Length: 330
Ligand code: SF4
Image 1: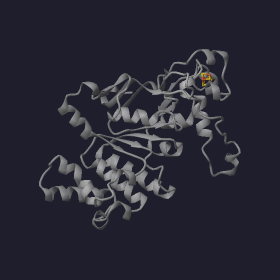
Image 2: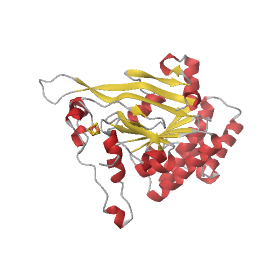
Image 3: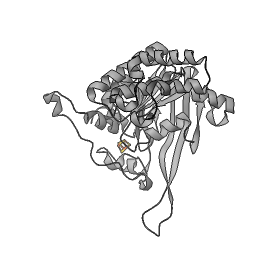
Image 4: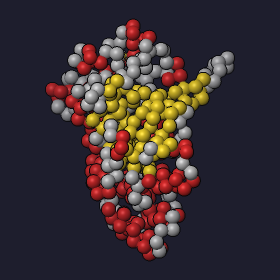
């Protein structure tokens, strides 16, 4: 990772939440949603966070957006700790980092016409004259494929894909450097998903945006991301350039995830593997490797000692005691 070109870096970030046991005799316990995560995102790249529901990827996204404080570690924005930003710097950070959520309709005001809510951020910052703000909002909407006619409508009068385009327009109108995309196409039809992913790619090329792209869908992250971190119970178990991750997945969890993706080819379908079991309760994990309860390669050492994340000279990082064995597809 070229740290000099980084916009943002999570450094040893952890986040725990208080959770109550169901029994009246039991005490409140801390559940670790994110554990010692370090990632960096460079200008103009798409960094993917992938994992099952409950893997901590959305929590990590909110921490990097500054919406949630980490309980361990820190987040650096251009090398400066978010926690140490003064009010003016924090306002600048909020402008440079935007977010797109999964449910577009839930993130639009049902009582405001589309044009007004895309223009709103410019109004809040009192940028230019009202006429200039309107022109910029219309131009931004046009750049995401929403014409002037659609801009005069209310959100419920648009399709799901059009609504998500409006959300994207709102996210980019202040010229951010980084957009955190949390499952941005999961609620859309498959045919519309490709259109929105292509739009995000085009905007990245035109505007030099970086994306933190959060998804449970490996096909989607493979399509759009340059680099991917695989999260399991809040821990990074593997991180690599996208091509390397799919060409040579090294962690047993990554390999199971990739093999569980449905494929159209009937011959290939026979090789498909379904990931066994559910995520264990993060509040009562046994010692050792967090994946051991679902890993067919687990040994006594795995059940006693948590593996460290080891990075090779190509920047391919894996946390597995048997990575050599796993890498040779045992
Ligand atoms: Fe499986 Fe052991 Fe590797 Fe964990 S450390 S993924 S249990 S082989």
